[in-house]
Length: 142
Image 1 (cartoon, rainbow, N blue to C red):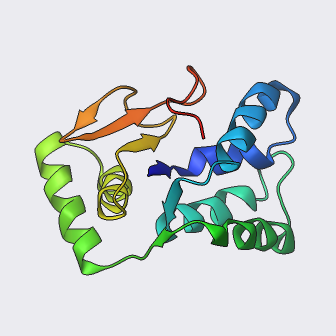
Image 2 (cartoon, rainbow, N blue to C red):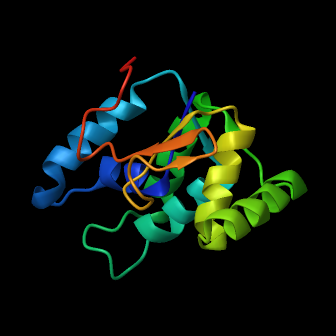
């Protein structure tokens, strides 16, 4: 399983001309079947995609419809296990809590790769690897 971070979803809905290549890559990723995400990712997506200062901001209804389209993937809930795992990751790797919570949700979802533009690419977090899907083709496509 592969875990997708919020930035993948943001690029998937971007209408900005400069994001065209990233939008294509994000949509290619979302066509996969072996993905998981978390409630945190969905929350961050909603907030960022509807932010009034964002060029091409989605309406509430558009953002909710996109989130609904992602229900085909497993979604890791925010739980005490996620929180405690995130706190351990935060302490070990000196990451922000929110980045650690992404990694914790990925680990608890059984993922081995996190697709993210925000975390350090090719970093290994105790068997959980981060890949930036916008700088290289994701491994093991479909």
